Amino acid sequence: MASIYNDIRAALESHLSNVSGIPSVAYENVTFEPTTGTSFLQVMFLPVERRPAARGLNPQQRYQGVFSILAHTPEGKGPKAADDYANILIEAFEATTDISFTNSDTETIKVSIDYAERQQGIIDSPWYYVRVDIGWYIYK
Amino acid sequence: MSVQSTVKVNKTLQQKLDKANGSIEEAIKDQLEHIANYAVAISPVDTGAYVESFSMLSVGQGGGRKKNSETEARRSRRVWENTASRKEFTGIALENLRQDIDKFDLERSEKVVLRNRADHAQDVEDKWGYSVFTKVRNKFGG
Image (cartoon, rainbow over all chains, first blue to last red; front, side, top):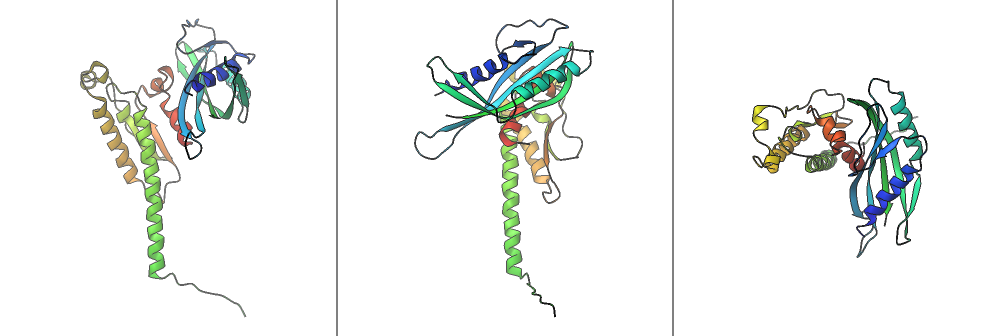
């Protein structure tokens, strides 16, 4: 079912919301006014592939994609804060982690984490940010 | 007394090996073209500067294409203003990448790098959320 994407997003976002030690989160298409000087995370849900996992009619599908989190910290204050957030996120979404989520139809899905990796820090005034990419997949 | 055996690689066997190498090279180039097609397909296109700035290079090879989106010529022809077509710019981008792939000496190249040197490439990736390279890495690895 196409709504699997809603469930995958919900699984990843609710897992993130339970991580401690992180700042406010700016979710996609939700109004968020960042305050200069205050760190925040920005998330992007990026579905990449949907392919049959087996031959035949009505095969199970493998879905995969990336959950990207940009850790924004104040510009000019050094990289430590963004690095610390990146470390927390990588640990929370470490490869081989399975994230369960029960939707409103009481159906439980399990999203598996394939990898969690960070990119270099970038200045985007008035922010300095580090991107953490979390590769996920699920068979459904 | 030592024992040894000598195998002469006759012409037929050498021809078979050459043919196998040719097939492998073709398969690798097909895969590189697949990556190029995907990267271009998921890229945003307005002035064409971003897609035309893609290059495929050997690891360690510097440079690559770099187009400026702020030139008068670019600003006057924009997909988002319907004064140019996406197909036109993506066609140029794909042709560029095919030329790069054709030039590869696969026997000497250990890794291939997809690069975009447009000034706004980082903004396309993160700020505007297109995440072109993130998706390419997820789909093809590397």
